[in-house]
Length: 172
Image 1 (cartoon, rainbow, N blue to C red):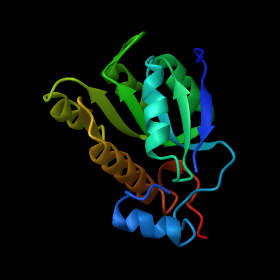
Image 2: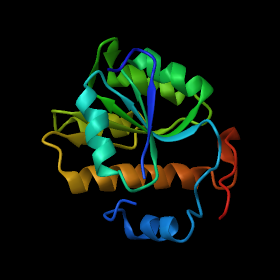
Image 3: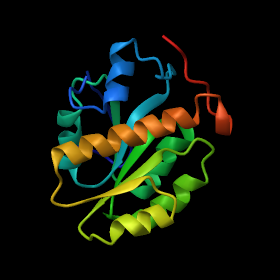
Image 4: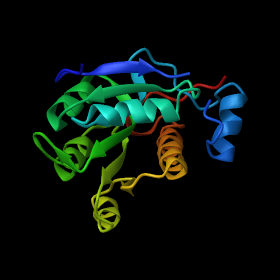
């Protein structure tokens, strides 16, 4: 059972990753950052099935997933840790996704934000506030994988040269 803090699940390569990303992973993970306090995906959701669902989708990728239940817990996690992608539910126990977006944007190495919700208009709202993308229910596995992998890849590219104070991505 999840608490208000967080939990981290290690994943092990998703055969449906975008071609370029799949090649990088197979070629020794050329853009993976090797830091002890880095995670690939942070979920911000009080719905425990989201983390389980994402874990199942990326189970062979080698990615790590950290889970938090509230906006406050997600931001707290990111003050001491780094995540490439934050997957946030539209509605949270302590606010809404835009509260998370505003809080995350103040971090120097903010994750790429992907929001999950029920309204088609959510995509434009998320993009307007600087998020990476939005996924609208019902979720389609291929779309979820593509979006998260693309967000992860974009975040890694942003820090290849050590931008925004984040550690450089190390080569294999």
